[in-house]
Image 1: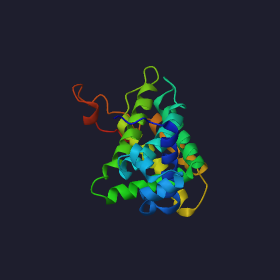
Image 2: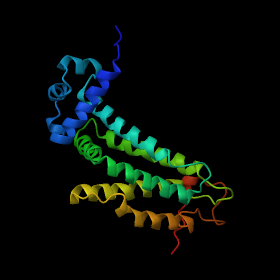
Image 3: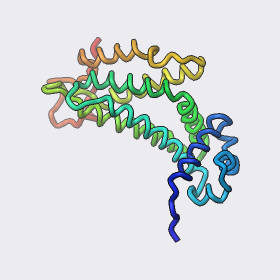
Image 4: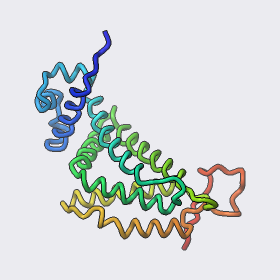
Amino acid sequence: MPKKLNDVQIENLIEAAGRVIREEGVAAATTRRIAADAGVPLGTLHYYFESKQKLFEAVSDRFGATGKEWVSSHVSEGMGVANAAGAIARAFARWAARTPPDQLTEFELGIWALRTKTQFKLPQQSYEEWLSVYRELLAKSYSKNEREKNIEAIARTLVALVDGFIIQDQFLRESALPGSADRLIDAVVVAIGEGAFDYESPTVSSDQTPNQRRVNIID
């Protein structure tokens, strides 16, 4: 007999799992503890989630979906790749600054996943999803007659940039985002605008794929 999904119960369990992970760590986030926090019988949790790992994946997906929607809303078609990169990084920094508990929970889940033999792909999948969103946003932002740029390299740079500041804020117990990231974001935007991420031309062979081209770093 198929399960009858109850959206309220599912949301309740995901929120409870996130709270327990954030406040007590993954080790303490047993299904029994999560069910107690959610105020439901243990059987209810197992009815909706076949394993604790599936519930943890749902927690990670929920955090990511909110951030991706927020970042995407700040990029418009044809605004130019450099402007889009700046908009993406600043939007992500503002979102991260408003959700420090969620960022800590993501760190907890990522470290837990890397230590297991079965869930190590969870953080990799999360990063790939973010990179995919960034690639799409950057690709649609090309302005008319803009030179082709290494979108992959820009996307990875943006992820590394803002993630670094999130970790800094967490470890130093500061609340400096997004201001602390602004100067470096500005520098990256200038670099993109000046061609640091342009593909080499005209020495690049026309039959090369984008992944085979090299980034032209301006000295």
